[in-house]
Every structure is written in structure tokens, then in C-alpha cells.
Amino acid sequence: MDKSRKIGLGMTRRRMWQAGTVVGVVGVVPGLAACGAPAGGGGGGQPAKRAAPVTLLMLTDHAGPNLDAQKALFARHTQEHPTVTFELSPNGPKQAARDRAKVMTQGGTPPDFWETTRAAFGDMLVLNVIAPISEYIKRDKIPFEKMFVPDHVNHITVQGKVYGWPVVISADALAYNKDLFDARGLPYPPTNTADKSWTMEKFLELAQKLTKGDGQQFGFGGTRSGFARLTDGTNWGQPPWDGKAKCAFDTPLWQQAEQFWTDCLYKWHIQPTAEERKPLAPPSGPFFFNGKTAMDVVFGLPPANISFKWGLATVPFSSKGKNVSGRLGLHSLHMGQGQHKDAVWQVFSWFRNKENAGAFPMTWGSPVSPLLAGGADIAQAEYRRRTGVDPKAFLLTALSAKRSGWGLQSMVKFQDYDPEIVKLYNSLFANTISVSEYAQQATPIMNRMIEESQKILPITGSKM
Image 1 (tube, one colour):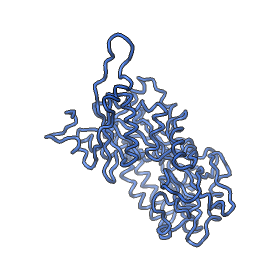
Image 2: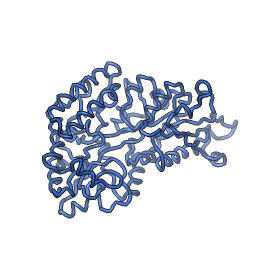
Image 3: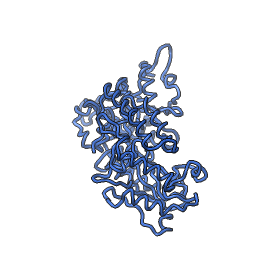
Image 4: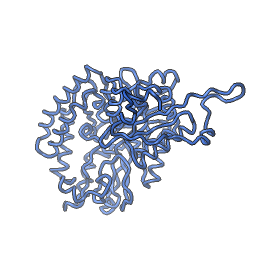
């Protein structure tokens, strides 16, 4: 083991990783490695010099089949670059890679790289946990800004430096039950973000027609997005903040949105209450797949053995301009402050190839790669092969919506203040406070979070 990986009096990496587990080295046997691409140039003359072998430590949120899929993908890299192997270390229960990376870095043994599955990372920049890759991008003349979905690049660019390599977009789409629509003779929702007829009013009309009123069939499942409290206003074109200093929870449009969503539950009753949901919940997977819900937002793979026909539409939108409804969960690979940055960069740049980039998203059940120019083709095809359903709606959302929170989650203090917002938001949907009370209480909390964060590390929000 590399001595630099040890801490103190015989404390090894494995001990430092605490709840994490090292899954055996991902690579290839020597005979197979010899068949891979050489590390140096070919041709005659002196043999090319090979880089020193290195094993890179990656923290991963995965286990089971998805971990196996990631191991297989990185083994492909090792086949092409035999001097680089990988140790994939799964996080412990309820433990995020970002938190482990902070602990390990502060303890003197930073991981080589990891994947963020949450937008929050400003605090990690302040602690110098993430290494920027801007100099590598400049050195290798990579057209980085033109390669990826623009808001993903904006998300990982802070004060002119790039702090990650985009690998996955978890986007929202509206799942609909074809059998329930067919039974009422209703047209399916469109898969087109430019369709101006697909509004929130039309969504409500359909949901009301598809709700039986007997507590057994509902037009809407109640899932609004993958991060509803920072997304609720986007169906009307209202971002959650102005991108600079002010939260938008107290604006008329955001309050209109929250009133609509609470009315879905308490006024129109097109979605089930908490008590009604319990007997309707499917054995596994999102609530939509109980077969008794006409429409609901989803953002991943369905469970196995679905007994009804279903499809995916884009999320409805009631405003002028581009449909920005929904949210994007942006996953990036982050480079740690370890000793193998050059090798990590080589791995990141390996994902420039669309065959490699396209294989990563489905380890998360997502059919969307942030790589443009066909980067999502493989993931889209794999989703379609597994489910029999066209996932184009996810891709269309990825090309029109913005990152979750429009940059708010990147704030240094977001993690500190968000629990207060969660309590208020839950009270709103428990019908114990009104929309106006929620706006009055939540807005100053968010503004305080923004003000404190911007003084430490300025963040620019997503652009319309």
C-alpha cells in the first residue's frame, strides 16, 4: 500500500474510511492488460515509457448491481490504460460521498475522486476539499463550455474555476398511465417542451377527469419534482431566487404556485392524502407505479414487472418563453486534493468519448448524460431496452430546465439553513400554515442564508 495512504500510528485508509467499504481493485488480469492500449506512444525506436502504476480511490453511493455496473465501466478504462486501476469504496448507510470526502481530507487522506449526487458543494470549496480542473482544461484545449448542458457547466464553475466533470443529469418527467387515459378516452400528455397547449390548467383538467373520488384512483400522485420546495414555482416560470441576493418565495407567482399545489391536495383532492397513500403504495418504486395514479413526476427507473401500459411526457408549463418547469439533479465527478491528480484527470477526460459518457448515467437509472452531441444516445437506448418506454421526456427537460434550486443549493450555508425550510414546507403541506404564512416565514430565512453565503463564496444563479 502507498505509504501516503496511511495515517498516524498504523492507521490505514480502510480505518479512516469509517463506514465506507473498499470493494476490491477494479482492473484487468495481466494477460488482458497487455492487450490494452499502451500508455505511451507506439512505433519504432526506444520503447515508450509507461506511467507508474496507480490505484485510484473513488467514493461511491452505490451497492449491488449499480456498483457492479460502475466497476465494469472503470474496468473498461483499465483495459485501455492498464497502469490505472480503481478501488470503489461504497458509502455507509445515510452517508454521502461529499461528507466522507470532507472527513478524509481533513484527516490527511483525501480520496482521489468521487461523484456528487447533490447540488450542495460550496462548503467543500471553502474547505479546499475539491481541486479545480481549469488548468487541465486549458492545457488540453478542451472546449468544455460547448461540450455540456450549459447550466451544468455554470453549476460547477465558481469564480472562474471549474470544479468538476459532468457525468449524469437526473431530470424530471411526467409519467402517465395509458390504461387509465384510454379508459376515459383522453389524449395522452405531449412529449414536447415547446407545446404551449400543455399548461398547468390543462394538467388540472385532466387530473380532475381521471380522479374517481372514491379514494382508489387519483389523477395526480402528488410528486411535483425531485426537489419540490425549490422547484414549485418553475411550472409558472418563477425561479426560487433572483440569482444574486433575494429569495422569491414571497413573490406573487411563487405563492400562486404553492396555492395551486396545496389545492391539489385539499381543494380539488386530485391527489391522495398521507393516509390515503398508505394502502395505495406499490410494493417498490415510485408511487406512480401502483396502477391507480394517472400522472406523477418521476426521475429514475421504474420497478420490475409493471402490469399496465405507461409513458413519459414533459412537465406542464404556464408562462411565456422557454419551458423551465422541473429541475435537474446534476451529478459531477470531483477531483480530490490527493497525489494522483494527473491520473484522475486522465480518467475524467476519458469521459469525453460518448460511448464512455453514455454508459455512466444508467448506473443511476438516468437516461441523460450532460454531454451534448449524442452523449445521451447510449443511456436513452439502454433505458428504452430495459423498460420498453421512450425516455425522451427526460432529455427534453434536461435541455430546458435548470439545476435544482437554480444555484441556491451551491451556497456555503445552504446545508445549515435548509432544515428550517423543510419544517415550514412540511407544515404548509400538512395544512397547518397558509401559503402567505409560509412565504412570510421562509423568505427571511432564505435571504439570511443567501446573504451569509455570498459574503463567503459568491454564487451566481441559473440564467433564464
